[in-house]
Image 1 (cartoon, rainbow, N blue to C red):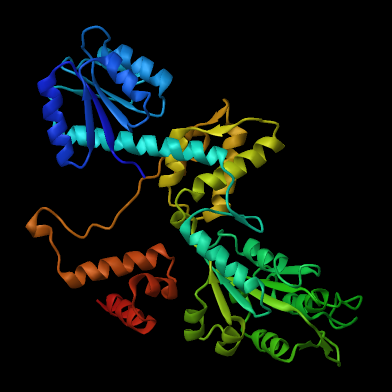
Image 2 (image 1 turned 90 degrees about the vertical axis):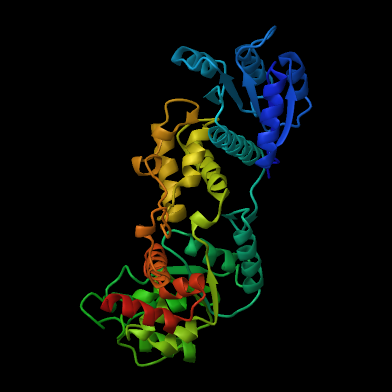
Amino acid sequence: MTKRRVMIVDDDQAMCEMLEAALKRKKFQVSWFLKADEALAGLREDKYDTALADINMPGMSGIEFCERAAANRPDVPVIIMTAFGSLETAIAAMRAGAYDFITKPVELELLVLALERALEHSALREQVRLLSQDGANQFSGIIGKAAVMEKFFEQLRRVAATETSVLIVGESGVGKELAARALHNEGRRQAAAFVPINCAALPENLLESELFGHKQGAFTDAKNDRSGLFMEANGGTLFLDEVGEIPLSLQPKLLRALEERRVRPVGGDRERPFDVRIIAATNRDLETAVEEGIFREDLFYRLNVIQLEIPPLRARGTDILLLARHFIQKFAASMGRDKLRLSEKAAQKLLSYSWPGNVRELRNAVERAVAMCRFDQLMVEDFPEKIWSYESRHVLVGAADPTELVSLPEVERRYILHVLKTVAGNRSQAARILRLDRKTLYRKRQSYEET
């Protein structure tokens, strides 16, 4: 975490003292130098996060100071101050490596804003540097360093050692199948088969045949006996992806198979025992589906013995950059593009984007950027437009104009609707965020629809 250490370089002592007093009130740590060469020596001591330099000083000018600082300490952004606010001066400062440009007389709020931006830039640059050097924490191929992922890894370790049925929940694209494979690979059944099926990809009659198998002649295209995925996974793990999409009419058959640990092929007259671990996954709110009568409650509880929730990418902080680096290396190698790296501006955009498609969307965005890249850095414009044009939107709950202020119930209404929209209508997840029970949330949501 940055300590907000600022170096001031100005031959006017009164100006230095004034800026020092003002910035200390804003919680900055400030040191000042009257000579640019002494300031450069101070930079070599590695105790500053940003520098603020006057452009007109005797001996070494602010422009020359900026050039030498950029050459020796590129990690310390320099803001140039001048009483001569011309475009030519600004261009000269930027060419010398200045991060920003501010005119005298200095307005404190504008200066603080410039320093805050410089500190953010410095911190991001350091993050990108560290991430390019350090290996990411992994659990069976899942990459992450964020606290929420460390917690998730610990849950995976504990659950992998059991034989209990698991329901993995999370938004589309977060990596639910990767988590299911991790549970299998780290568990007792790792030497046996891991058999996945996307329950949303097949119509009901084919899904039943895929799961339970069929006898020859059971239906028109049943030309041979088929054992089914329960038997194919025998001794291993069966992964039911998108389990919330299983037709209601097929759910009793699945429930019976899970309870009896036996399956009967379509068109068959004998049941066969199986021994598999069941891992299911969904991006739907199954509790709401149970309430709406489109998912059986008894099947839900059979699958939901242990529930694991994968955090969305937007909640994982700089894991975004870790994953981006991983994908850059992967796609650069496959395309014969060695030593590609992420530019700082592109990294900032990746961190600020909301990633509704999660890790899957990031992977696709990086693949596109690597393919489109013309230089040795991935630039902002190499990524899809929706990423580099993205602007964060916040819920406005207050206003400066008293006539625009709203009541507390209206603030609550707006925020609850915002949370529901953000989690794509998942009432269980919204209730956890809002710290409401689901019935209260349901009642409030109904009341908003009635008004």
